[in-house]
Length: 282
Image (tube, rainbow, N blue to C red; front, top):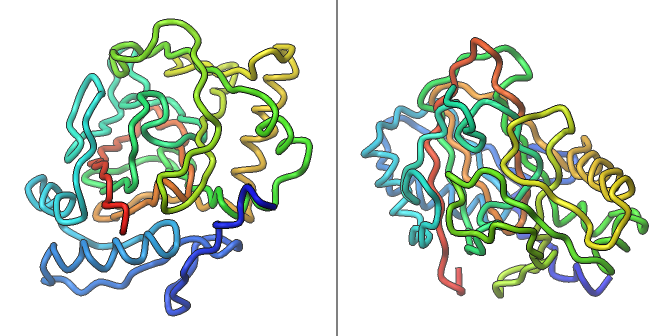
């Protein structure tokens, strides 16, 4: 399959894996080691395995910013709130908040809607208390999933354009106000991968974006995204993380897709998020 010839990863077999497909690495960490050392080890593991998980850390905002800046260059920030070295995903109750709010987020890649390259996503649980199944982050091994994708799903991605309509204007103030197409793949020289977001469930409001297959019957388009989302989140490819305070996830945004489940009515969820670009040789 020529589209996915570069999907092999360099894996360290000493790490505990997070999915049956082989994605992910759980990194043991000793308290008291410097943040800069944490950055280097988790960076290597994330780039080699799709994502890296460390538990039991005690980072404050200054530590987190140091960690992010030790990992690489922050993205050229184009969002309506927060910063590339620290955005608080705080499960806001404010009306209209989606990305920083309490609803679910479908499978997506960061930077998609604003046309921004994001290589690494850093998430750290500063506060978390929620019911099982709520407020969880899921990560999909998109490269393996793409290589093994059923032909009827692959054909849509190969032959059609995907269009988006951004409805959360406060978070994405710089994007077009009407439907616009985004290429379904991307390649910044390190790996060719899928570049997309799936649809919010029909009963979820507010939504951050709408998505459709250009030129396809709306019902067929909706059915395609439902099936694609289910495939990318199937047990073979997806890891779902139930947060504990002190957990750190470093995600390779080129090798994976990710999303979250809705935060429960009484749940508390404050994640620090950073976004980075890496030198082409990384």
